[in-house]
Length: 129
Image (tube, rainbow, N blue to C red; front, top):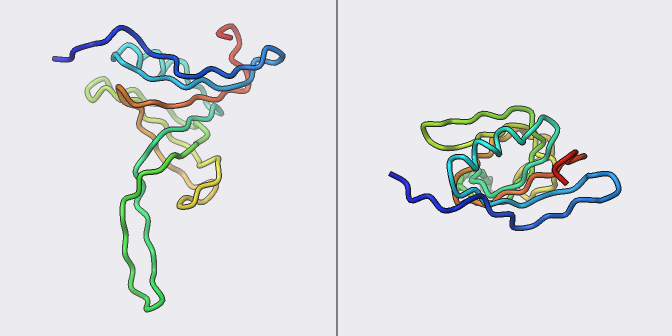
């Protein structure tokens, strides 16, 4: 069903040798990569990726319009789920970085999928770095 590539790509790595804090940008290419991502994520990690968010605007006349806007969001992980049927990792938590369309602390769910880049930031990468 799927034409699998070799393995997850490490796009960028920025981890402090001093305390192990930092981030990695990854590109999952197989379902196994998503499974590893699911097991790698912990509560209080920060994840950044592209998402769609419904944005409503009110004009000066009082009319309201809403559009779906593609944006980069960073959330603090409070919940992680792996869906083996859709091959997705869903991460929920409050928005933890300034955004034009999403207020700080607003809850959102990010979906990590095959061939879609994301960044994980941890306070300590322990043995990985």
